[in-house]
Structure formats: structure tokens, C-alpha cells
Length: 221
Image (tube, rainbow, N blue to C red):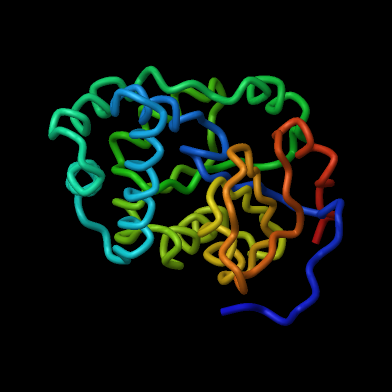
């Protein structure tokens, strides 16, 4: 549902930042392309996978979603297994290592991701930085943009949503995170399109190097 409330202004006063993992922080798209055999096939598969997770609501095994989306994209069954087997080769976007030192040290950091708990743990290790909160769809019992993964992360942070920034990787995260009360900045690295009529982010950035300019530590409550 599109909110009529005015968007917060930059810089945002926050106590914590939650990130989408597989697009906002990590270049999982190149891994999909390699498993599919080409960028064209990989993108077709990834878009079908996104559609299935967005529509799934309640969690079903992540590997099943990978297999179903690969089949519907016309790819051989081995593609999904290849993706899982090469998961540890996922790379963060080039500016991510510097981001951890550029952000205020008082901020708590976490990720909310649409995958299994095991694969989330493997992907987080690629970040080179400890996360205070890691919520996978499997733990939450639902795939984003269902409210449950975002709410589970907020519960672990024990912070009001207005003081937690969500950094989206895909357009569906914008209404999903906004719907539970978090301000959203969209790291639209891939030039994806937002669905017409959906909630706008507070800001859209093409690189995480811009993120530190968008936030300030919140004043003590």
C-alpha cells in the first residue's frame, strides 16, 4: 500500500542499518550468470526467481525455489545445484570493505535476506565484517517482502523502525521495509525498475560509497 506520509529527509538519524544481502551488499547476480552459462540466461533466471520469492509469502525450501525458477527459465536442472556449490565465491561490491570503516562505529548493522539459514551464513562470511543481526527467510518463516523477516530483525535490534535504516537491493524491498515503518534507501546498482505506484525510497543511490553521507547517528533517546 502506498503511504501518503512525507518521506524523511537526508541525512537520516539512525541507530542501526539493515541491508538486503544478495543484491545490496553482494554481487550474487554474477554468480547466477555463471551458473546459468550466460548473462542473458542468468538474468532471466534471476528475474523468475525474484517473482517466485515475492509471491511465496510463507517460506518453502530455498533450494526448491532455485530449482523451480531455473526450470521455468528453461535452464537445465544442474544450474541450481551449480549455484549452491559455488555460493562461497560470491563477492561484495568493490566499495563494501571501505564502507565498514566509513560508517559511524556506533551503528548496529544487520542483514535480512531471502535464502536459507545455511546459505545466509555462508554469504555473510563474504562481507568481511561482523553483523549484529542476520535474518534469513527460513528463520522468519517467510520471504520478503512479507513483513515477517523485517519484523524479526527489528525485534532482535529492539529498536523502533523509525530509527533503523533499510538499504534495499531490489525494488520489492522498498514497500516491504517501508510497510513496517523503516526509512529505505535503495542501492540500485543494477538499474532495476520500481513498479509504478509503489512506495518511493528516501533516496536512490548507485553505489554504497554514498551511503555514509545519507545518515547520522541518532541522538540519545
